[in-house]
Figure 1 (cartoon, rainbow, N blue to C red):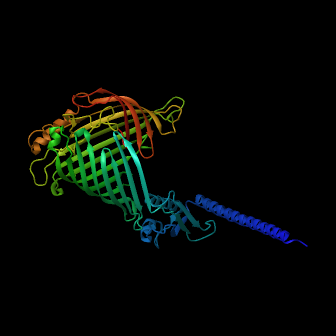
Figure 2: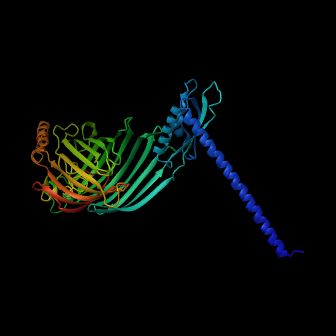
Figure 3: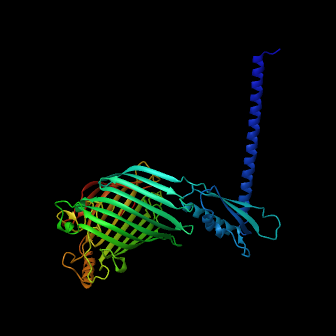
Length: 512
């Protein structure tokens, strides 16, 4: 007769064996189901690939997991997939292209995890049928978190800052977002902003934005502090050709304050409050393979702004246009060809600020220091102090109304790292000229005098050699920004401008 202990051991072993057998059966079931799923997917993939010309109709579209997104919002995106009664059937290839287009639109909304998977439930089209094959399309759209909070520090040329960013997503179920930013720093003493962004009519390529900002920034190159407070509205869209557009209105109260005791008289003259009421348009054609470290392609960009003219009001008036272009080409190396990692980049920028009369006034007003262009520094003309080019008075940079600048860089793979890393050696040369409107310092000018002065100023851009510098450096392209450490040697410097020989550090997303 077995003891109670032996009975317990026997029962335990029996239960363990049963559990093991059940686990084995469950695993076999899972394996069979997985194999059936894989076979089904392979069969349907083969059907889709071999029957591109097959006439089909899409009767149903489902977006899975999008529990907090409005149904009407998603219907606008998916509606082109479903044909109305009486419409001609489309081919399977056309259906696949439309499905991919909808998946891309869903990804662009920014509220779903990428990539978005699309599945097609299709009957076997090889069976005889007198009607088009009917499809059901499923999109697996896993929603991202409702909010993101980021904090950190940043370091740039002569500036350090700490920041906090908060983004709230899909606020009302239509891919709306609220983006708030706060930062404190050494040069940008404080900056606070909040902007609401929403797609228009469920179109991720057409977006509306509205918000406001408050900031306080030290400008030591001109011995003052500038405070801004105001708001703006913008409409952004992507054209069929892939060009990005942005048009908007901004109303900003500006204050030039904290003027240093030794500030130039021209800086003191511009101190005080102004209100800028302006409309602006930005156009971008980006065709570079990797904008932060391009090896081929080109960029074209224009920014146009109109302030104070006619009904816009405010107390500053001008038309401002700025052009930026860049190009990159791979450089062939024997033994490696065009895939050597060596590239030549070149860039050009130019701008003009044309004074206008405000409202019904008959005489244009001279431009102000907070509206003029500044040139010089580690992200545009290297080898010069920040705002080191152009008119200066008593050591202060006054800015200019017309400028042109250009540069070229030869980028080489860093030794022992290879061409696939975002690290490069750089050989560069860059230069430019920044000029104030001739006659700006005189008495009030009428429209004819402004036109003559602007023509003369533009003509002077080509007089003589521009200020320029050359050097060597190291470039690192982080996904969020580009970092450069350069040794620069100024070659030609005009009187009054502030060159900088030696090592400089630059960080940004746009470099000359």
